[in-house]
Image (cartoon, rainbow over all chains, first blue to last red; front, side):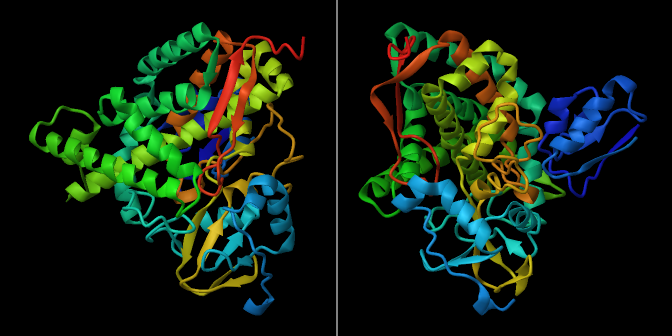
Length: 64
Length: 401
């Protein structure tokens, strides 16, 4: 699985980071989310799918 | 669709009717048209559907925030930064503030916030009763915001009281004019504190802002003042209001309180639902920069649109059964912190404070109920949806026994 954050859409709400700080990190400059693993480790697959759903900017997508 | 086809509806968020029937009125607006014109408060267009509110908030080129006020009616107050600027200036101001509000930065404040929470709750439990808005809900975020900025939190009431009074009173009323007078007074305290930092920098947020720059642009004194004012207006009465709504809800809804007390791990998701259901800020104005349309409805250059986070949060196309409080709702992509370019920069701080407050509160007093003095409603919810007072007694409600 691959997870990506579209930085045109991301506004740094940080909800993906709170869902999984193992999978996402936030940049200090603007709070935008950065993906830490490519590919996503299997044990974080569900976290990645949840992040897609909870992002209020719809900035996160996964390729299964 | 022509402009003459836009329906008119006398929507007034400061009316008593709105206070009583907010959710019904929102539902009616969403059903009418993507754009509805209100002739109240010198006229403005109302945007009530989730998708349209999101589209406008995400398009600062067509819908500007660079205006005298984002409130309707305008409060003619001094400028707040960065809420009242558009890109690319917006990016500069957000970059100046962002490092102080990251999850890492907020974590450094948690211990001090916890000390305040424990002290406030110990006093309440000992007395056996409390007016929670003043003694808990406003106290914690006001003091936390002061520490964030670099102010001595001992004087927290100088800020909390006028902000609270201005928020729940009707624009132009004697109560609000008195609150605004006190706000002007604390404005001069803010300026004095800032000027002291120019002479004696001490490494706090104000001192860092004073020497800050972004891509070669230094930050002016006026900008420092307006950035600090934004932290005060954004960080104090807003979180206090959100928390007032939570404790009022839990004082009245035994089932919701039991659900959380049974498993405190449920709190973070529950907070999102409380925020969705009762956002402190119901909406903000945007200014139309060119003749354009919203979901096929024309809007005119120079006019105001009022984008209603409060209505978007109850749009049935985004939220199943929006009128029900479901503390496990997922996903919950509410607009309580705004959306798009102006997303509330303090959202992590707000969420952290609310989680800590609610966890400690329910541990210290798993049972409490509304006392005789009751819950005092605000005069208007048009600026801030909150409670004036929430009077409770600690312990099991004798009427439920």
